[in-house]
Structure formats: C-alpha cells, structure tokens
Length: 163
Image 1 (tube, one colour):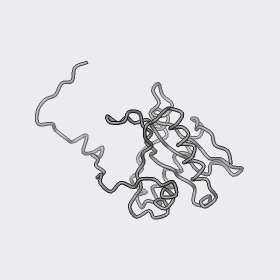
Image 2 (cartoon, rainbow, N blue to C red; image 1 turned 180 degrees about the vertical axis):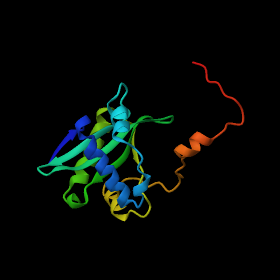
Image 3 (cartoon, rainbow, N blue to C red; image 1 turned 90 degrees about the horizontal axis):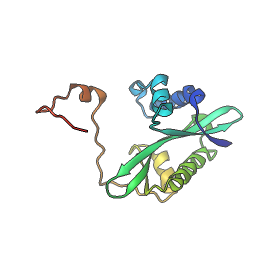
C-alpha cells in the first residue's frame, strides 16, 4: 500500500469514493458535486482541500479528504472531512494509514487541532476513532444551511461589506 497526494487525474476515483460513502451513509442522492467542482476547488488558483490516497495494485483503496480551518481560540486547524475506504478494502489497516497520514500533515503545518465529525449511528467509525483516544464531544450541535436555503435567504436589511 502506498500513500500519495491526489492529482487531477485521480478525481474520477475520488468522486467514486464520495459516492460510495454517500451510499453507505444512506444518502446517495445528496452528492451533487461534479468533477469540475472538484478540479476547480482542489487544483485551482487557491486550492481549498487536499486528498491523500491509499493505493495498492488494484488501484485506489481509500482516501483522506481534508482542508485547513481556523479556530478563533486555537488558530490553524485541520478539518478531516472524510476518510473513505472501499468496502472490499476495509479491515486491512488502510483507514489507520490514512488517519495517521492526516495526523502527520497536521503536525507538519503546526495545526493546533485535528477535527472531524462522525454520524452517531456509525459504530464502526466511532470505534475506530476511540482507538486513538479521540474526544467524542457531545456538547456541540452541528448546524448548516443548505445551498437552497442560502439562495433563498433574504436578510432583513441590505448589507454592504467594504474592503
């Protein structure tokens, strides 16, 4: 198994893994990202994310998808969006290799924190993270506005932000 950073040619495999995860998480219709989005956002002028791939003789076995975040209390952080290991590759240590690679990346960039989320029903993932003595914080509530909500929201007043 080798670990390497993804390049543009890997994006179809990255998207395939994203779709595989969405199916596992019972939300296959929620994936709306395209190859063009991934290329623009990951390999454009200001890359917004990085992907570390785990690859063996049969191809891409898994990936870690992460980006830089910033805490007003701590400073630079890494947010691990997803670790995805193909179903047929699970149980071979690939997830541990990918997680360890992201930990090392966080150290390399002097991140103050590595953060991620896990669905409360995903016992295999929860047990995986417990092996690292990860803090599973029950005090924070995840919040979001969907793309549709962002597009249809009307602020109660007109806003201008000056540069």
